[in-house]
Image (tube, rainbow, N blue to C red; front, side):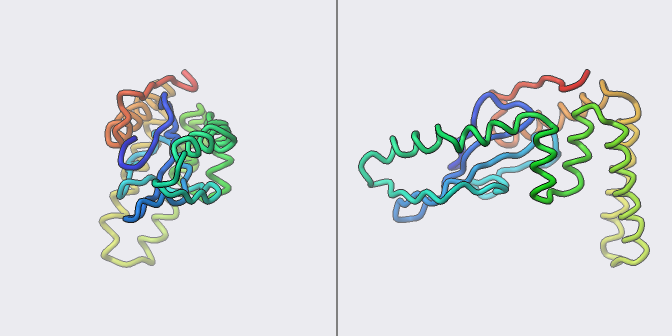
Length: 195
């Protein structure tokens, strides 16, 4: 357990786990299923939790209840864990991310991981077009951030166009950094989806 979060091991391209909400009275409030791709830059565990994208059914327990440990193990080991671990490929994640309306960076990098570099580059170009429009009509205070974002997207396109080996090296770097930042680097394993 790291910062009230239990991670499912081994850790691959995706970070699976559960986050426990506790109160000062020792109550254990809804267990939140956590799922996040490590290949997207800057995945952090904010305030002891994770990005809470999928909420499981509410499970309210008191830590003073008799048998609370067995109830937690029974709950975590059943259908909730099975449904969480079923999302184990880029294509399955893509469906899930589209349903939740993730940011546009998630599909772009998911396509790159799955070997669809042309699609990833197309999504990056669309983002650049959107940012170009916002530069023309947007707030001047956001101009520096927007230009920096456009430069980053152009670098990503060059990497995608240079081949899958270089793309995998970039995604592996993102994963390693995120695994280290989230305290799971010892359990993280890299394996390319496409060579």
